Image (cartoon, rainbow, N blue to C red; front, side, top):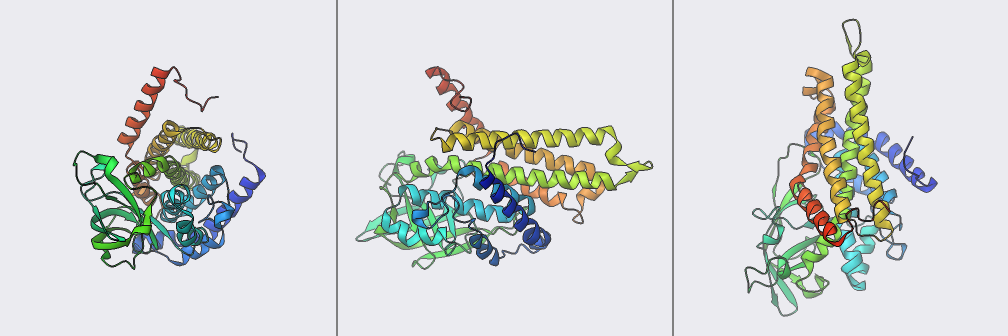
Length: 396
């Protein structure tokens, strides 16, 4: 049962994603996590189902679906394997959306079409070792040299950077003023075959272990000038405009992780016996399950309301941050409660809830920490108060 009016097409997409996830992802998720192994065949399977081009218009070889359909499919993938959901989310958000909205037709032909077909995997490189929440403080430099730009620097936290075919990377093209900040940053379309491009350190992560996260080293990397995305100096603005979509994807991932933890906890509670009966009969356990389910439902409702507003063309910066903030903190709380319900067994790898707990944590961090989301929400709210539109458009 759902509180939201999903279409029959959306339900079909949800069912397809659920069946695929439970049949092909769930049985191997724990093994991939233990081995920190990226399963490259997964890219092929996701592309066969159309899940790597869901939001790209048919003109560019995508499916041209709405955000709600994408988020429903993404949640189902995350229930089975959060690392696989990262692959799907990253590819469908910033790299493809920025190429779609800010690339030229030649770039869309060369990169976006094969990305929509799943023939090229997309990644995004904004953060650096010393530039995280202050992303505008990045130091990677891009200097024009004839018909090329020469990029020098290190990008950090690049999801599946070891396997990406197309990486949208930010670099500073205006180094004349250290205070230029975001105004001096441009976006470039990188490919691993470029001279001076190399994959650096792979992070040994607590969670999402089968989604490799790496550094990208740019050692005087020569990038053809026609790989500049849009206008020089506007790359950071392009990224910010695309983050609304990316944050909705993180929220869907978090909801999927939380749902997996709830399902595991409810199943365990019906099987585990203490004092002569199943612990599901104890009111304290029932209260925990009820609160977990309520928060997940609230997070999903907020997420899809924000997605629907986005589809209507409304500005949803505040609401996408709210969805991301609430869903990710819900995931962290729900997975912690799931471990508590399991007791000591929740702390060992024989049961899946410890993996869900580890996977949930980073959702509060990447694509903007919870603290950053609160800043975004508060600033937008205060601006709305000043203009007399405190509710925004989500409640219209």
